[in-house]
Image (cartoon, rainbow over the protein chains, first blue to last red):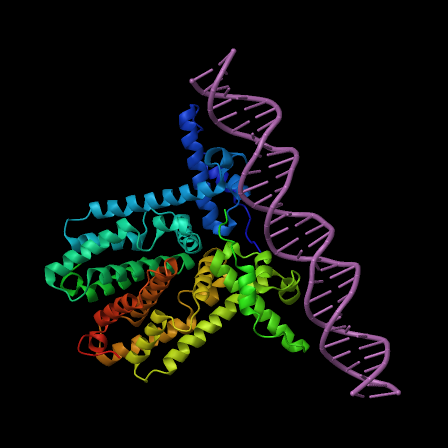
Length: 228
Length: 228
DNA sequence: TTGCGTTTCATGAATGATCGTTCATAGAAT
DNA sequence: ATTCTATGAACGATCATTCATGAAACGCAA
């Protein structure tokens, strides 16, 4: 039923044993919570959502068995905070990508896409865990608000950028439809990456998105309008 | 950790108790195997991949506990045959959709997309289970060949249709890229549907795909070329 | 066809492993 | 001295799987 328990434990433990455990009570709490959340992401990334057990958390975190319930009361709550952690990290990441782009809507849109395509600064396990939560949200709605395909903040940003472009050049498409298209495309891209990271080529991912944008918003992303 | 056990058992059992159990040995075998596979799809659709236990199979199938191991040796093998069942059903379904469309590549392509958008003849649980396997394939590669985003038969069909269109009208896009775009789009569409079936509107899904195609292959799917 | 020995199937109680959680205890920070 | 933290053995529940038992379908002789 379950393959690949392998090395894991000791290896990861050694790799993460860098920072010394804080001595003061307040800092220790944050330190341990973070360590458990990291361990959870690692475990989900390696073994899937169903492969996350308390024993695995112990294995990957190097902490004692009771820590999960001490710091999160129940495993269920740890999971919700893991998701929150992932959602926050992802939001901060794409918002930073947008912020560093020039103000034009086309540039913002492209920055968003480039951010998702190259996945720089993102650990692999993170996206896999993120996708695992998204899948779990199908049968456990309590996860939905944070990892919906149409999660409010992200979708609103894409949609408003699309609306700006449409208003600028009178494209014949509704902002909602344009935004959904882009979102779905990125969704498929992630999944494709996760299923086989070796196979994935940022260049191809970028080409797919570029083709889509160039086709939908030719005046902004077409051959004439050169991209950085 | 786990919500919604509710009615399920009795209700489903009553609903499925239509066909009488065959008396001959050969037919009985097929009958029970099918019943277990159905129960597995139902269970995964309701509770997710991790929610599929032998107890759940017993609950949904109404069969005895030993049946899983009698007919499939191990739960693991049942799962692989469930996936095979889903893959076969999906392939048969989209191939039928293509077969009933006129021979032109644009028509074949649209038939494929319309098929995925409206999801007629597809039970909800089926797609959810299918997505669950796809997610599971990320951490369990043995599932990958059958439910890859770029599964050979499907992707090749899309790609060749794209190649035909490109050759016909000299579009400036590679078949591979065009096919990936369409595939990713459908992938995102499915996930969006699964996350909230109530919210999903075939009309919107269709509009998203139509916009993409019209933009990429304007001569075939643009405003001038009317769709059925 | 009927009767009968053989073979195969269906059942569910029992098993050991693992699940998430609890809690008495020892230790450290305040 | 007091309060909070960390530990891991122990617990009951549930997991997948096994297997002794009884029933049913089968092949064949009469």
